[in-house]
Length: 224
Image (cartoon, rainbow, N blue to C red; front, side):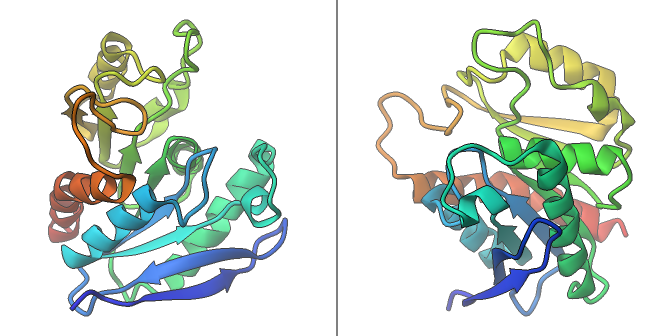
């Protein structure tokens, strides 16, 4: 039987945001996740991923940024995104019962998490579901400098056709990160991990990625 989801508000400086929690009885760790720029925490991709992670023994907390709560399309300023991330991490840590707490997310959500960790948010690891290394068409402007300040393990699950992360540029960045970074390429996947010629809905795609992410999380939990 699947672990039920529970909803609860998270107080944050810019206003209360919604969150969804999945906490299996045998959870070895908690993974806190934020959504991408264009969709909230209930997007089927993220929901499918979190439910599959729960089935693999990893508790998840996914939350909205304030702009999604207010029905806006444009993301909040960086300061607001960061403050909301810190509030979500604190809420998850308070309920983790001693389990390690990792962070990550889809695109924007994962990038903001990494910026917070680089500046001291004490996560045990990072899981990126499509890291936005650069904007499409502007590979000369990389969003990577802060990654070198992160000392915990990082998992990059990345589509090889992702216009937000040219494969050769990502490889260079990860080489500088050394053994802190693990790359799991999804052959033919775009920024949403869709593969040409393969029929699958977003929920199935997200769930499939849990098969890659869960072993990484469990390794971190086992080493603590």
